Length: 218
Image 1 (tube, helix red, strand yellow):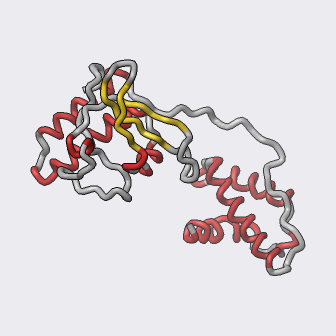
Image 2 (cartoon, one colour):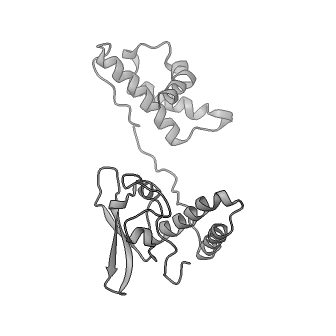
Image 3 (cartoon, one colour):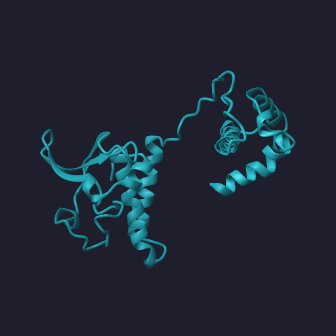
């Protein structure tokens, strides 16, 4: 984090603001900096919105530091004078055909790894793919998932045994939403043991179940 801010200072902020006193840096001058960066990007290309935003964040940190030391009375408002509509982006997703090819490939690799020492990693990858699709977990939620967030319950609608995951939208909230998925449970998870894979209860949840029993995902 600090190293990134140091590069922003050395490469962009200091060359532009270097001869200015902190008290001379105003909202208007910050806007001039934005225009300067848009016209003088790397290899003629303007920086991404997120890149420019991080540079302004770095500038604001410098000004806050000066305010704490009494060098300036207040930090100017560095927000853009107007908001532009950002580019609409869509997350990449698999078509049903692509996903079918994907999980078949991971299943085959789990059964026949390139090297025997990679068998556990290949099995974990296949379980991870299936669990992500069946539960709808976001990647960051999956990384924070622990044993205490997963319950073995009976599905009233189908009379099947399923895993119910409690997933958090943030590290603070742990009851944001409930994801339900149908899985064939391994004995290790049913019995609360980790016979096949050594996973501590306080560690992030890693797959301790086998393939789902739903007909569309195998």
